[in-house]
Length: 307
Image (cartoon, helix red, strand yellow):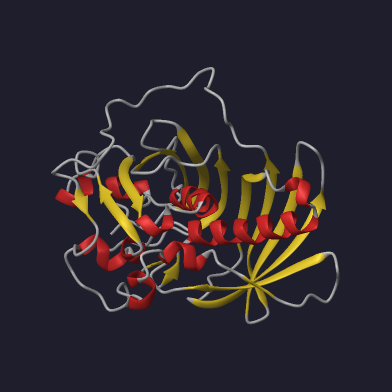
């Protein structure tokens, strides 16, 4: 889901601040924990069921971060598909189409997995994220093989440094970090040059960020892959640069995974084709430290009311 922001980022609000799970952060691999699932008994042999825990750090304000829910659902889908056929172990969730039916609370959630198609090139898997008996997120995954060769065509983004520059705005310990609790589970910086709203000004509906997982979350290839998917939903809603602050509920989000990220910083570039009176679209592009495309997302969301 799109992050919630307040108009005055310097003002601390009780509703926007969620305490961290210190034990999870201290582990050095907080994202590994959220994508680690426990298999549950299933009423039918063709249905996978898993238990997961989404710690409070994986929230934006009081709401569970949408990209985290997509990534954890991908972990459930991947595990069940591999369990069904060992020959499919090389496949990865290359596309995810997510509908958000409700907002789960941090804590225990269940994942119900159904395989719709098994093929040599493409497999289709559906996942329902359930809490207290209600399906709150429904995601249809397409599994295939990741890109592992040099691209035929790939635009360069040399105007964005590989690492955050000295004037980048760090989330942790700042007003941004009081809202974006995910910054407790990874390193996160915002490009001040594009974030005009930080200075009370208006600008183009676009934002750029740098994000890096903790060392413990870069050791496992699958965890790094899920982290890349999650980061494709990390930008604040771009209408903030037009003076529209607040929660921007996601209507629908599609996420593409192109390859596993190289170690190091991820660069996130968020843009919009149109900010309408009711809805806006937001595209997010994720590049790794080599400049390769890791993930992409496009979502349609509701425009926050202007304050």
